[in-house]
Image (cartoon, rainbow, N blue to C red; front, side, top):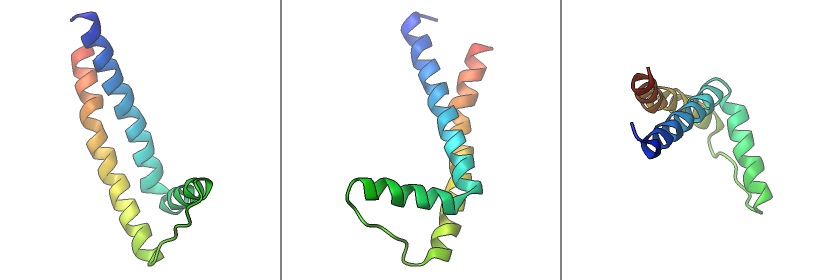
Length: 83
């Protein structure tokens, strides 16, 4: 492999690992993830809040679990090319 390709693969692997970690956080702590989003938006002078909190927590959990599986693609791609 050439050097630029190695850097691209390393970046994809790092992006996949960060996405995996965020998916775990979102999947297992959806309320904290929503609170983090509300806090970030308040720093930008936006007021946001869920209309239906129960549904929002359920959807956030499902999307977090989906993100875990989706982020495994670049991680496995990186690991298979390196090893």
